[in-house]
Image 1 (cartoon, rainbow, N blue to C red):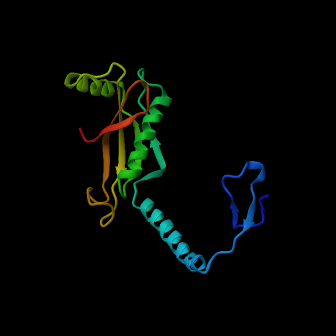
Image 2: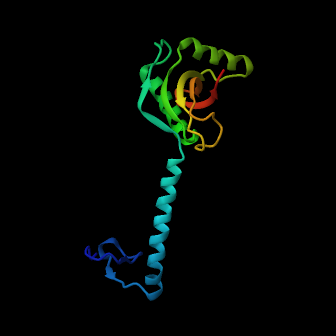
Image 3: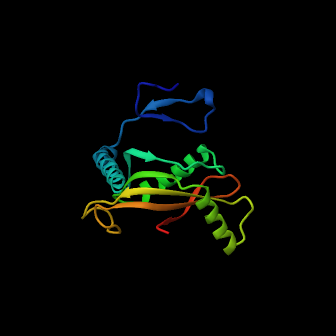
Length: 176
């Protein structure tokens, strides 16, 4: 029988399920001495995780999404592509804030497909989709130093690719 009131329950493995037993076990002196160290280690781990997240890019609370009409992609497919870019932005655009993003239109997406099809043999199920965005770089002294400080980058292009109707992946980004 398992004592649900005990936080130090030990379950003996190998016994049939119906005869599982638990009993209280008191920590040894060595385990008691290690408990404060475990608390400190947990606190350091939590603080590191928080600092790691603080060093990432961010999405503006008033993020604007403007999509050109499309005969190639549904709004759901475009949103899936936007979600892929947002994930990449948050992870890799240190200190930047994404302000606007949207589908660039069928013409640019078709151009990307044609560009790659001329240079390599594409799987017939390969698709390309292009988004454009506006983001704000971090102020001076913040971020990784890749950007001009406190600058609005407009018309930043994101090229996404997928095969067989699978998930969109960001394959390229930047100014054309």
